Structures are given as C-alpha cells and as structure tokens.
Length: 308
Image (cartoon, rainbow, N blue to C red):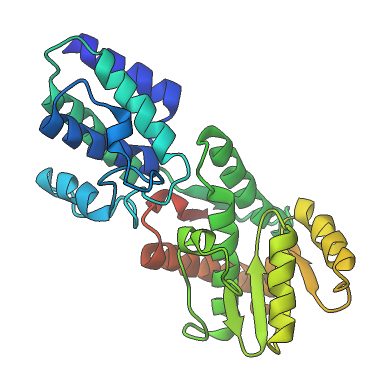
C-alpha cells in the first residue's frame, strides 16, 4: 500500500494531476480500469472521432464523487474541453499499466478523492488594502498571483479567469447587478466565436490577457453590427492590442484599456475619492467578484480573500 501511494505521489508531482481537468481524467480512467481490467489500451479510450477521452464528462465524474459524499461540481464539462485531456489519459494509462499486479483500484480511487478534497480546499488569492500603495498595485497583485499559479499548473488559465471576473465585478459595482450576464471563463474560452465577454447598452467588452488578431476581428464584427468595442487587457497586452487594431485599420474605432487603470479609477470614483470610501469600494468589488465565482465557476480557489 505504501509503495502504491508513493508511486501515485510521484506520478502526481511529475504530471501535475492536482488541477480539475487531470483529476477528472484520473477518476474516469480508474473506472475504465475497473470495467475493462488492466492493462488498458489507450487507443480504445478515445471517442470514435478520436478527439476526446471516452466517457469523460460531468456525469461520469460526479457519479464517482457522489459515491464519496462529494456533491460539489469538480468541472462543468468534467474535463472534456481540456486541451490536454488526451495526453493526460495516455500518461495515466501508462502509469496504471506499469503497476505490479494485482492493482488496488479502491486505494487508487481513494487517493484521487483526497486530491479532490484538497482542490476544493485550495487557498484563494489574497489582497491587502494598504494606504501607502496605489489601487493599481492592488489590482496588479491579484493578477500576479494568478500568473504565478498558472505557471505552476500548466493548462489552467487562472489569469484570464481572474481578469474576466474582476472586470465583470467592477462593472456590476458601477452599474448594478443584472445589467448584463456573466459566463464561466471556460465557456468564453471554448466558444471562441463569442462576440464579447460583456454586452452593455451598445458596447461590447472583450477581456483578454493576450490580445490577438481573433479578438480584433470580433471587434470588427461588433462595429459592423452597430456595437462599440472595448478591449480590456494587461499592461503587457496593451501595446499589442493597439498595434493589432492599427494594422487592421481599426485604431480609431476600438477603445483599448489597461485593466489596472480600468478598475482602479472606478474604485476611486465609487469611493468618492475618500479613504473610507475606497475601503468600502474595494470590499464591495471583492464581494461581488466572489459571488460571480460562486455563480459561474467550479474552482473555489479563484476567489479572493480581502485583508484590510
């Protein structure tokens, strides 16, 4: 048992299987091993079209979790839309096939259930309101934390999710809840043809950490449809977005904003440029952001803990 757990820990560390997509793969493939026996043929664990892992989906994942008393949703699509799921499946099958028989699949499943509990208990991002630092820095700190977590968890787009929901929360605080809809970041990412992340009045807002030609073309579509496009991006993405807009002949028709300024200026306005008001405004922003995470995301580690 100790050797099996050690092997699982080594595999998990090497292939970073503690995020929601890989965890879904591990749970579903372990069930395939129960039904089909070992060794498994990875080529037989693909759908007919070969583009997805066989049986990988929310229902299958939640069925396993429910047996262990877990009712929270691990992933809206059960890892199905993750670009790395097929590779993760092949690596995990290879790992299972190399284990010394007989293999205790109950112990393996229990190990992954422990990782699921750890995932749900993951620490949120943290921000601290410091009177000696600018509000721009406060926004930057959250994005830096998301970037760092993303580097340590390949395949997960934490920075993009944080950016999208920070902007959404900021707009809700300014306009009031219900002025527009919110979507999970994975939904927005999967549906690359979306005409915008937020539609408010005649404005289409696009939020992105890495502006590319695709978002500029969606802005062109917005203009053709009678909307005014806005791109909100990081400091690094600002110049790229402006250059791409100019190259597309849309430089004077697309407003491009850097997210730190976009959010911080509104916090000053909401706080009526007073110290106590800023504290309340930041608290309201974080509260609304966390509410959005609860509403549309399944990863609680995207939340923000606000310390004053």
